[in-house]
Length: 572
Image 1 (cartoon, rainbow, N blue to C red):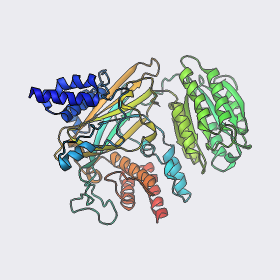
Image 2 (cartoon, rainbow, N blue to C red):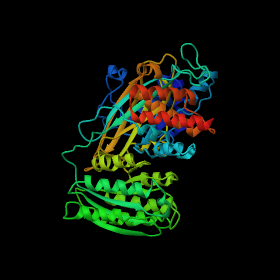
Image 3 (cartoon, one colour):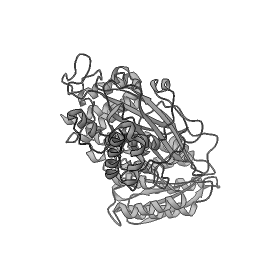
Image 4 (cartoon, rainbow, N blue to C red):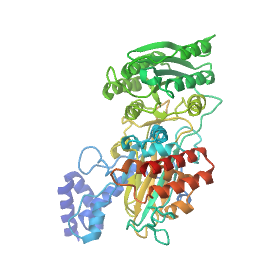
């Protein structure tokens, strides 16, 4: 045994380098008896360290996994290939395990990663624009569809934490026995199992929530509104909508808050320097400035952002939340129209002054990608409005309550248990991926999250036959908005929590999330691409959305049902 262990240690050392080969060969060689087991043991041990796993109770995991255990600090595992920790396999596919089951060959593939890491994102613009496009009689372009933003658009029932930071909720359901016809053509067996041979798939949900805004106190806010007054904003539902919304917000902000207005078309102008709303006559003057906004000519968005951030930097002072609010259709056509130069300015202001960006998109033709990139670089988020009621709610209810922050540079990492998981796939967050080894690197940008926000990550997970016990541990890490001290919270889930069929037994809000995610996935992959395992066809999804609209009595779910029905008609 000693001789065999030594041979395996040497083989492992040659493959991964002398340093880690000797360390892990000595530690695990005798126990596991071959090099592949040594490699797997090292990856599993390192993955659990990186996730900062702290145990919730098994019963809590089975009942939805609402565990909120502060995660202890843990060092990142060594990268056996040298350099930074390895980037994850995007779909978490256990290719080596599949090969072993097939032929039991001695040839071994490198052990796969069982980690998934991403920056948090509370954007909703993709879903808002998709609804507007469908209402106009067109299917949205696949490139504008981001599933996480569809899911973010719906109310969740996650518990809120007592202070800043997050609560962590985990739950899920089985999707290969969904209880509805996934193809619309009888593609299920009598017990609801898929006939496509994709057994073992479940939907796992990781829900994160921040504490709602406290009406009795928030820090003063300095808001710089950067308003697009280009010719394209003359279309109904653009500048007229922005003016209505701005007018409403003036009356709801507090006397200690300040407001500036910058407009841009061919160039940029400071229409209103930073003005405190408590000053005598200030609200009336600001109303007159807003009422006088008129569309002009071309769109020099770069100039607007540059001048807007200049004004915001001038107003930066300790104890004040400083935010730029960009209101535009995102269709830059003059000046510097590339994202790089604009993004560089935003990134500099963010780093030096803590200024965050809130992007509000309008218009039937909308520069979705540019607005999303600006918000991501500006540590903010984007939304899209297309009617006066939505705009009024955004500016009179959501914006005044959410100018504060609960967390900076927030990231999530989910560590899957290779004893029970064959493969997994994160649904969405394509533009928010973070290298696994950078989870605890606080110099790597995460997402900024305000009060009362929720973030939902959905995973398609394929469990091994007979899987029992621990499936995954989710950890969220963030920096305190004021002190920038790091904090973590975790939640875990077990196989029993994924056993019930999604459409017949799961919580209604999980069913709504699944419907939104599957709908977005259909819009993205209808012309090609790999759909989410276990997802139903569009006709079945339409029926499910209609049923949920009735059972939840939620206007937002009714809108989702209408959007799915419109897509079904347009698809023929």
